[in-house]
Amino acid sequence: MKLKNFLWILLLAAIWGPSFLFIKVAVQELPPITLVAVRVGMASLALYLILRTQGRNLPRLGRIWRHFAFMGLFANALPFVLFSWGELYVDSALASILNGTTPIFTVVLAHFLVADDRMTPTKLVGTLLGFAGLLIIVAPTLAVGMRAETLGLLAMATAAFCYAVTIIYSRRHLRGLQPLVAPTAQLLMATLFLLPISLVLDQPYTLPLPSLPVIGSVLSLSLLGTAVAFVIYYRIIERMNATDLAMVTYLIPVFGIILGVLVLGEQPGWTAFVGSAFILIGVMTVNGVFRFRRRKTYEVYETS
Image (cartoon, rainbow, N blue to C red; front, side, top):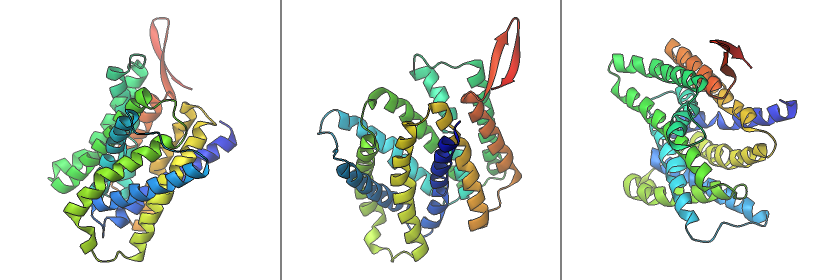
């Protein structure tokens, strides 16, 4: 990989990685649904303004907006709320690790839903390693009966599963669109889903004014971790292949863990580190960094 491409990937990971820290800070004062409603609302407005400055606009109302609605619900509204709710009970470092299981869920779903993307021995090994890592992380909370933390971890795993569903869905229904059109539209739909729920359930107008750290976290999460991240993501797509782009998945937990420990004083247990190692190796295997190739009558394990 060219150094310039790696620096772009490093920049994207450095923007996405702190998102879990910002969520952890924000949910101390804001209900998860309200937090996400503000996040997607501000991000959709920012992206729309960028589209307009580029002389582009959103598609007219029609069938395509059904796909935007699906993506808005399962790629943004639901997983963002699940991660935010989960971080009420789980450290931000663990959240960043569980976010990294998305490729594992994707390869399993693709086997059943995508005709030309079947499970291979390499992908199977990577998938098993990834799920083993997930089990290592969740098992201690199950063993001691920590119900809230367990539910938080499972909520985050469910969010990663939602991301996997939408990756496959977007390949089928949202190809060929101009950059930033799909994320702008789906964030707008996510806002339309969450805003009325927030007003009814959370009644944010009755909440006290958030503190400056929370306001800063919400702005950073909305504008930097969502809007700017999408702009950089689509810029990277134009520059490099999917294999190189997959490195972002490896780097995000690194930033998440470091920031959680240094800024929030989190102390992940040994199971978190062991589980994250299994997940990381599993994702790298799924993405083809490690491969099983058949030679003659036996299999040789290679690193490519």
